[in-house]
Amino acid sequence: MNIKSFFTIYNYFTASLNSFLAFNAGALESVIHTSVTLLYKVLTNYVLNFIPRSPLLLESTILQYP
Image 1 (cartoon, rainbow, N blue to C red):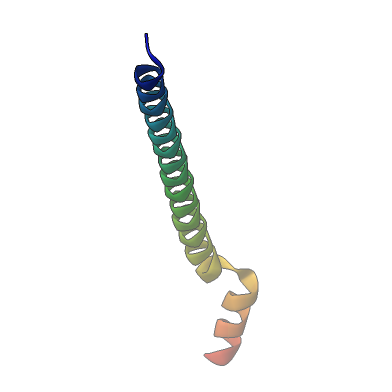
Image 2 (image 1 turned 180 degrees about the vertical axis):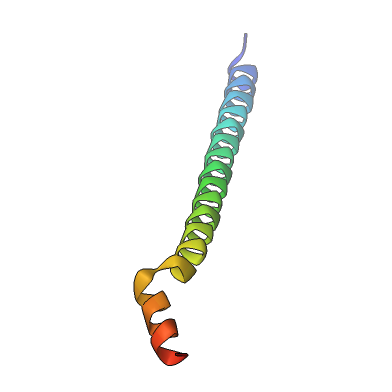
């Protein structure tokens, strides 16, 4: 095996390894983005459902409209 073919194999190996690592980083980034988006939607849904049932808000509404 001459040195040129060895470097060719090495270049293919490092290129495939780099693309694999980049794919993993992209997959991890998309998973983090999806989980943060879902958490944001759940929290906003909870907050928006909780605000109308808040006693302070209900009390101020009752005082506003006797």
